[in-house]
Image (cartoon, rainbow, N blue to C red; front, side):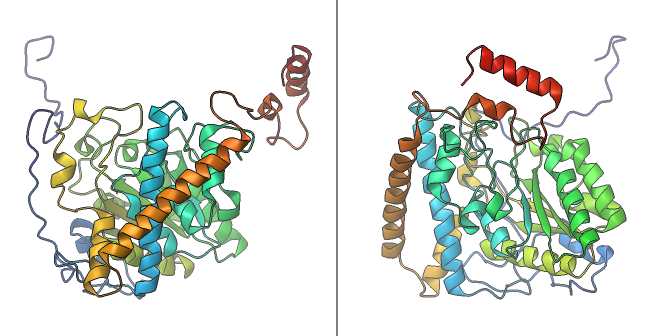
Length: 414
């Protein structure tokens, strides 16, 4: 009601389920045979209308792979992807336990979303740029980053390559062309388009990939990026990861469209909607988008349909806004289990090998933590020098910052 006693015309969507209720999703009717795979080099945006409202899948409910979107990727490469996903999940679990025991100040897991960055990064070339959110750390494993280095950053010790300037899990990895995670949500979309424009201007075979959450797609940066991508056609892959929840608000508060994917059609950009828990489908759509971008045909807009199975962060309690059983009944299943079961079904993997893999990686994570704390821990340090407040921004430090730097040192900064 408004102040005049009349009914307000504003519609405020509500989450489909709330704490204390039982979650229930309809079984997906989408199958791998539903959608044809158009030629990326001749496809027009209007040709992807069915792909923006349907769902691209490769792995069927029977664990087999089929359909036009089945990618040219071997079982041996899929095993590498499976190992990366298992590594990320175990790494996340161990880091969260360390946060709960006071050894880390803050942490964010990728539980249920491990396939997203790993499959998509594996479909790229080494020279391509990665503009992640905080749920794409798995891309660093694909690009070869060492776990010790990642843990040093999370602790913030003297070997933190960010030198204490960022929150934990806001990684950056220059050698892997993995750009620093941004705390202000959404900014990476516009930045990624800008870098892609620079690559095109220089005539380089570089493609930029970036991700944004469903909640962050309600930010202006999302639309700015799409507009520039539409006008200038830079080589960029724009992913909206619809994991159903922002920090505590449901995805239906972020868009009035039927899907997140079809919003890009208004910008005359090809749009795809993909099962984000299907490793093969993610690899396939990213490979398709990269071929298009590399040929000078511009951006692809992708909705990655998945589910955030864990809390938003170590500071969040999801039981306050969603039913506890909701992650268990999500129809997309678990990305690790789905790829594992497929590889077992074709004789490339076994339950015993999977258990051995989990045990080996768990030992690797614990050994990496013990190595990382040799350079300092959260409680005792040593920490990066306070001089790093002023370094690595300007080649020549401006006079006003130099005055502050000198004053800090006079007052005993270390």
